[in-house]
Length: 389
Ligand code: GLA
Image: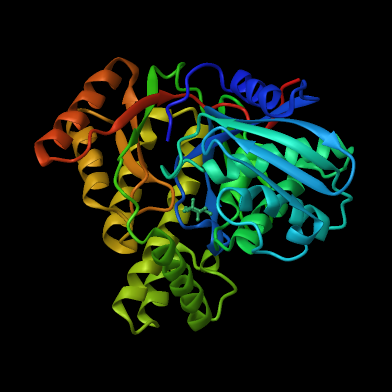
């Protein structure tokens, strides 16, 4: 993997010019995301509160006659091409190209006449860090194809389509959070999403005004069986909902939790349910505090979410727990793993003037334990997918 430098939109344009010998018709960008709170609640019909990152994936593209799609990716350095046959059924295009072919497939399956196209993709969203690089790729490609084809698909319906590309074409059983975040987020806001009916509220999240910063810490932990473990957690939640006779765990409130747990005979399942039910409540409590302008006060909820993921949902790893502990010891107001788990990133809410000290403390704790040095970057809530020009 090369480490590209320079503006990501310019890199996509330069790639397009080099590969296809002409100017692109336009450029479309979609961001990565972090989830402030609400983990593994989306596929339980619950609540999440992600915000978009200033790191983006850009697709430079033009329209072509016929049903053929050609895609160059900066990251792999390769160009792939596929036609109608390869998007007739899921699974024909594999690797990174599956996310692109999946979007074409999902659009066609929903009855949209997708135009042929040439695309060049560049990205600043790191792969495999749990910052939704795949959703960013899907959303940038979707935005490009919709515009190039003059296709009508309202923003609120786009996440489901991109999610189908990932669930069915790529074959990853993820929820609706990532695609919703990268498509629907707004700058300066977190996206309060009800994953049952996909209604949203844009919650002001003004870190600057509160003198705070969110530090994203890339644990650099290798993903350990993340796909299988994710699917297992999802299955266990669905089985618990069935055993409790509710459509989804979202339908169990914290007030009903003890009674619900008493009806489950397996200790592991009880822990999984306790995480999801309490996590939904922590999202609601976080939203209430943010609505009241009490940004500093959400710290303990973030940390409680981490403890729940560590002890009840059991999806953290030593590097992640080390980052959270070191950040809190260095004065972070709250810290938690963000994303699916088994690696990925931690976010820490810090006083802006303590951001460097917290980053240094995490780096030192890593060195002490012999872990690969973490990446640290302060972030502000950025806009969702958009056409650049
Ligand atoms: C991954 C999935 C999301 C969500 C999170 C956990 O990011 O893609 O749908 O389930 O894990 O909150």
